[in-house]
Length: 566
Image (cartoon, rainbow, N blue to C red):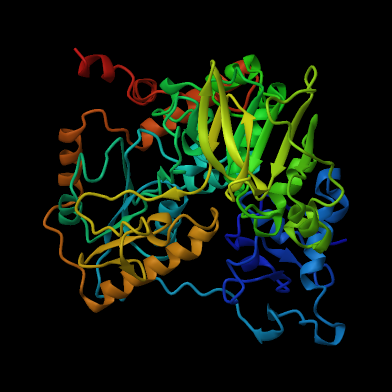
């Protein structure tokens, strides 16, 4: 029996480090690492020890004979990665795979400890999502550094808490790995403090040897079409935050009274929101989806989601694993729109390992222009419409339409269009970083200029994650990104180029409490976690999230909030 890596692979390569026979590729030392959608286990080299499954932070690795019906394709996906290698060129155990070139590799080496003549560093990490926590983990496990964790929200987690879809509970388990460090003896936590607003970049630097900014990319890209600012057009960023109980998204609400929703974009986020919109609310009730979102979905009338892709299926940005998951979504039909002959041609020409090949055999039909007619009762479907993009959002006689390109040319030589009736349009065309006051910012890329993570012109300040490299790569990509940044920081420490702080940890604690008396610490965070789990048990769910800042603070600081607001 062999093991296989499945849909929720996060690519952080923890499994690679524990494999005794080096049968998982690509490894972080190989050029292909980061360019594949997932890691793969070589079925002919695997010795069935199970070490990788035990180490996986997101429960993505299973014995092949234990795969569920929806996961069985992953046995072939893992094997197909190695199928291009001839038997006589197949890498032996202990050799690395890097395309056709093999080389010997050793176990990962973490050269992180500082020379003995250095005292422990005090490092602030701004942001408690995956990027920030991988950086904190690296510092805590491999150096004697003291770490100050800072987040603008009164609860930790970042995109693990507020970005991962609720029906992907295995992916959320990486948060359990990070939460081990929240109460670490060398960690101080200040939640509810926004860098650049409550404390300046200079104040952070004055109280720490180094500051790592892991603030992500919280803005979204716009379509730039007429009608985009109408009430029926939202960003997928806002929608994801809404169904994940983000405190800044609760009050907005989402109108789900129409039968059709159009989602613009061909990435994993587009598939996430499409899947949540048509999923069975009863199934979602077993997740940690926001209570208000669950209620709205139960009362909603959405029966069809049309996912628009500007290019063809061969160029789609979502991963094969997320697309495969749609094929196994109970009670939901997955359909390919056939308005453009290039779509069928790409699907027919694709191989089994290509994204477009996953679509082979799916029903093909033309999306009805006006409304999702024929979706009787609870019948639900997701329509993948390629070679189509929105050009305008129209409101006519109380109805909303999305005008999209329809292939071919009209009588004036312009692109032919069709009007899709839709109560809601969600744009999922990418994220964008926002500037942090006091730090340089590249408007073109939405990132902070840096060299190996070191912020240009600010000694002792560093970046990691999407604000460093742009909005690309999943959770696991932040592990290698953080390793580079921490390596640069430690090299600067050894070189003696870190500015000496003028204030200590206690002085910084007093500063943040003056700026925000409602700041939450590790003990308060633990109280929030207990309260949410208790609410979940009472409702028969894993967790019911506290959805407002007031609720979070009142739970973290019982008896304090009323005194502070008198």
